[in-house]
Length: 116
Image (tube, rainbow, N blue to C red; front, side, top):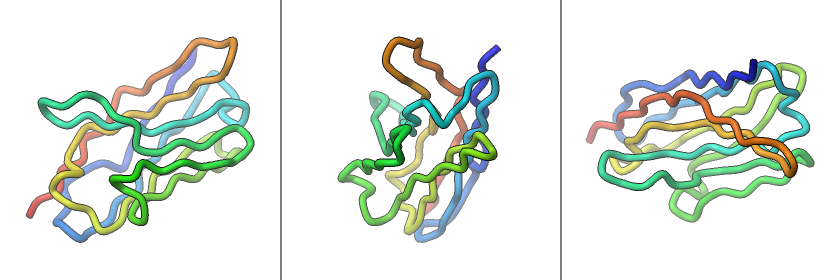
């Protein structure tokens, strides 16, 4: 059974930092493209950051320079480092694993709330 379990969310003041973790089980995360999405209240889910199986990263313009994605293949875990957080970063953050020829997997999400 495949599971993606996010952790590290919480309440933080504007300007603060959080590091989200996505621990994968049932799949070898190293061969998947791993992504972080977020969905704020009343908004559509949007892609925040991605890292390919080869290690190439892409960060959405809205968070570029503040967020960073990384992976630890030995721990089967992907991270999202979020710095200089803003109230508009408040959302539920979801981990996603995808690769060609395979189904896509989602985590249950972790809430991030940034107070002003």
